[in-house]
Image (cartoon, rainbow, N blue to C red):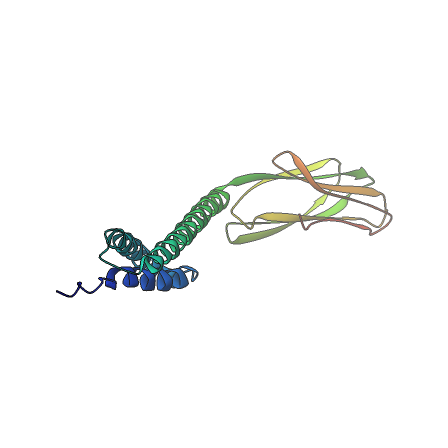
Length: 197
């Protein structure tokens, strides 16, 4: 009676699936197909080694190579999954911070101090997609105006111009108690501008 033919099919299949799965595992998005390939390659490789140990197969080395390739591919797939999970978590956190910033309200305080007979003040504020500009003539110092702004792109500007009699004026902008901009001008028709904060 001739000896039975070796059952090398499972070990060979494990090697082929492990190799293909390993190659696909390096691709970030398409690599999703690598998961079943490397898992199946690992299982078939283990079965092939088991058959070789029992003397039913002669390709133990090929089956072991299939196990190694499948294991490496599986590790790469797990690493990609961890990277994508962290990226998704970071995006969620960034979106939450962005939403919180969009709903945040701030108090902007415009202040003008100086010496002289008066000055012309122009102040503007932009908040929640809207903007407003106001002009005032002041005759006494100090002068203050408080505005509440809201949203990601919020802020304002403050410009002070001395009169024909000259003098010194200083503009100052604080947001939630923190000074953001200050400027001083001296002389007739001089301009102090506080903006870009």
